[in-house]
Image (tube, rainbow, N blue to C red; front, side, top):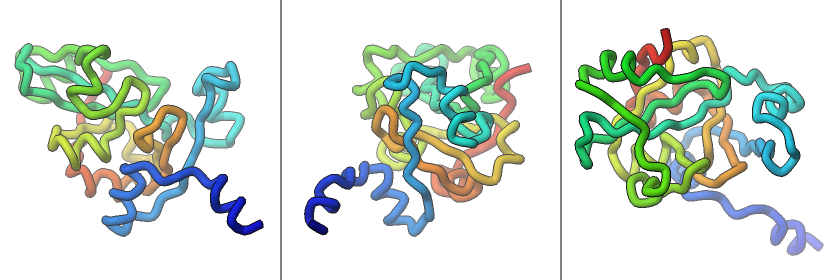
Length: 169
């Protein structure tokens, strides 16, 4: 019977293995809001998780340079001001990376992008909305749609060498 239970356990994602390799504690989390027909914010509230602690990962291309990508992580409920982000980063302009080409840019499909793997594998700089500073625990994608990891905000910032910026006025 123990074998069956082991079989049903989901395999770790590559990003969870990266956290393990760096001895970073995390909890597996699942925000399957699409399959439940809810909004992501409703799902977070139903699980008793502060929606401001669940981050979306936005991949941006700077100055229309095919090699100048940056990643910005911000709470689900917030928007991103591209002009402000460009200004904060000292770039002439930034725009959203091509969703259809994300797999080639980051190695992840839309909805599975995570600062963990993008930084470790691709070396892209990672920026965080400064408003998350008061969130001791945050959730980011585990590299698979619907699967997240919840960890100490400071552990993630340290791992990806993240910096805080303003992303919205």
